[in-house]
Image 1 (cartoon, rainbow, N blue to C red):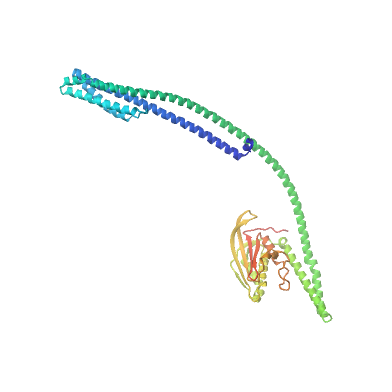
Image 2: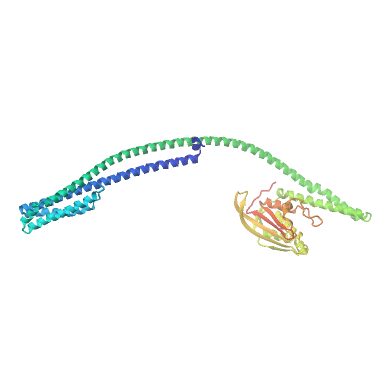
Length: 492
């Protein structure tokens, strides 16, 4: 299992841990604060509601007493001045009854007492109005007699009883809410104290984590500096090795150049003399040499000629990179026109047909591109089927593919050359691009077997790739892929 230090050393893990802790602490503090505020709000609303209930009940009680006082004053004095406070009290009692009906009682079971109280108040008002109406109709004695029955007093006693019960219940509930409020205040103090402590611990933890991260970062920085120093030393050593290798490569190239000069001059010269003296023997002494000797001379002459062609092809193969020309913008359409013009005789003799689509302009060595198309088209004409005229299709397409040099997808030119010749088995796909590898004997088809090897080196020098698909008696299809705007620096 990972230790705490290992976890802290991992920046992603440590900062994820910090994020989780911060979110957790904030969530807990917010939850506790919301809970405390909600409790305070509910308690405060309860206190406010209880106070309104107590005040409303007191006001209703006082108004009932005022109405009863006005009624008795008028009945005892028969002075109409007492009617005004009585009537005003009656009006206010009616309004207050409506207000009391709107009140919400928090205590369970008090709503029924509230309804009974209001019913008693309404009955009391009816009793008061009945006696006052009797007095107003000059029936004072009947009114006093009704009062003296004690009915009104009984109503009031019931009303007073209900008032007291409701008021006592609300006062008790209010006292309970005050105690609850005190408890919530204590809990709030504790909650905020815990929040303060956790926030301090969080800040302390962040400070520790920052210190650890700074220390780890400094260690990484020191390690990186040491690695940079080591890498710089390795680069210097590698650069020195590469410099020596480059010098060795340059020396090797010079030796190859010297070899090429020897091959082109010193080796060709003896072959030319062999061929020249062979011609003289055949011309001057043919009558003196028997047929067997003439056959020997002819074989010697043909071998010298093949040797000369091999040396020339080998020299040309070796100079593709070392003696190539600088790249310029080359029109492949013009290259194809020039190649077809060079192959005019072979095309006429074989009745070949060349079908082509417009080709692009590319960066390349025009001489080598001429040689590339010349080799491929001449092979397509040479390796034709008996009694079937060659038909060669040249097509062009563009595609996007991964460039191993640029390390990204880039535009590639794809040129296909397809013929209807004798073809070959696909298992020899790689063999045909190897120098001096032949699939047929010299007696069947002339050549040194280096033409397609030269084609591959030319395509590779242009940053591309050449592949082949073939089937016996079904023709051959060469595909050349060259990247867009490829540049190549010639080796001097």
